[in-house]
Amino acid sequence: MESTPWPERFVDLKRQIVEATPDYEKRLTESWKDLLGELDKHTAEIAQVGPDYIPQVRYEDLDKLSAEEVNIIRRKGSVVIKDVVDDSEARAWKTALDDFIKANPHVEGFPEQDKQFFMLYWTRPQVQARAHPNVLKASAWLNKQYHAKSGKPLEGVDLNVPLVYADRFRIRHPGPGWDRFPPHVDGGAIERWEDESFRQCFADILSGNWRAHDPYELEGRLDARSSLYGRPGQATIFRSFQGWLAMSEAAPTQGTLRVFPDLVLSNAYTILRPFFRPTVPLDSEDILKPENWVFDISTPDFPGILILPNGFSGPRPTPELHPHLRLEKTMTSVPKVNPGDMVFWHCDVVHSVEKEHTGQEDSAVMYIGAVPQTPMNTEYVKKQAETFLAGINPPDFVKDKPNTTYVGLGVDADVKEPIARVAMGLPIQVA
Image (cartoon, rainbow, N blue to C red; front, side, top):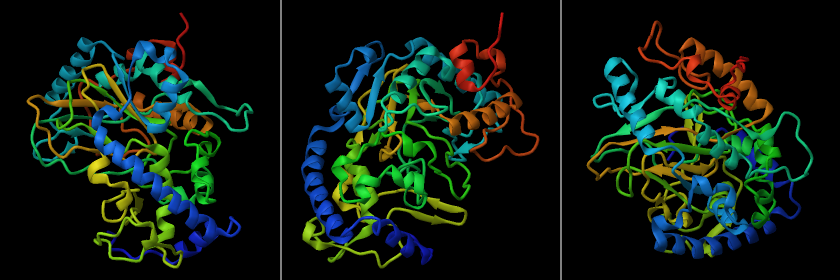
């Protein structure tokens, strides 16, 4: 998968990680075999059920869900929240974005010859959608799925206060050929192993106790550095969930999102995979048998992580390198959504976009994730607010070309509600 050789220092990193656990080879091997057995069972169920495996709830019911219903969402790591915004309002945002693109033909996007994914962050519809009280309240509900294991108050952290992370939008046309987004995980590549704080999020997995892994434990996330190498487009903040808001109908096969809907299993497998290698060829029909895998930390590579000129990308699991995920059968399309519905997936969830859009209408979404108030996030939002007021790209993204201007950007006055102004890092207006 990678053409650039891995630096030998990553052999030392693997050794350093496992040596923190007594009798590590035995414990990790037993844990790996146990994990493969669970994957065998659960991947079969996921493949059989299909899109109905993804939980769906109504926005107005979020605070009425039973503990069991919430636990299902937490375990699967993905959820469709219906009717967050009125259909008519969401459709109007799509129309306004179409108009913005026509008024600004120089906008950056891809594919170059037929732009459908746009490097735009501050159009008025985007600003209005992020500032919508229901969008922010849904984000807060998701943020509150996290907790501090110690139970102690954490300085500068308030999960009831949602923040805004400005991201892009797509208006995808019907047709094939959309291969930019194969199965992947955002929010940190090699950093998951290399950064000590980030690695702490997976401590139970790395110590041979994957069943105790809690993807919603907050403390390791607070200082986790997801961008050690400063690669543009790599989020430097902590998003509890990634998400999008639908501005059109979209159903399975119509260019929608796909997820691997078992967060604990995919985390455990992704994190442990670099410490094991197969003893049979990757294309062997016996590749899934646990006895054909052995513990091995003698090589520096981390399967699924790509080496780039300016850092690392991934994790990007593939059927070849991560066979036990059975991605061809388990990457599950989210159920049909209508304008105003939102889809969210935990920051560690393996996700992709369908290659083909078989529908008749555009499939349009705005990317709006859930972001809690933490010291690191608050600091980012302050810098982001400056770029908003200046009408330039946010700090995490590639800078605009010099002298780029747009007609119809959102402005300070478009953010009215106090909850939205706090989320955007803007001062509260006193009447």
